[in-house]
Length: 182
Image (cartoon, rainbow, N blue to C red; front, side, top):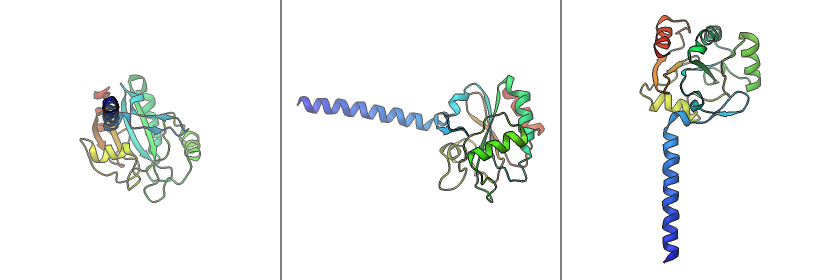
């Protein structure tokens, strides 16, 4: 009988641990991803910041948006904005490089100083869990249609707006929304 009580006690502890894990998995701010240099991070590391997530690519017609994204970041980072690029090779093989090549390209060509994450999938069967949340489970669902789609999160990590690739980083509506959140 003592064994039965002990087993039940352990079972309850396991169930609680599983519930705790489930809660963490359901909080999109806890979804892990890697920086372009391999460090583990999550949106929780940017708590209190307004976050502009961008799926990026180095060989795209919209690649020049790195210039505007960097300008926006430098102008607003002290007020609490962070731009985070997630390179992805999901559209016409426009991000074929390695993480090292992507970093060298972004820093060397566009002098990017905002955080760049490791290359991931933003659509398809291997979609990264963060983008699964953003595109399927968020308050503003919808597939990423092309490179340089933008997701704007408030200081609490809540998705509040989405912008297609053709919306430039200096777009009045985007900038106004960011300023209101700051």
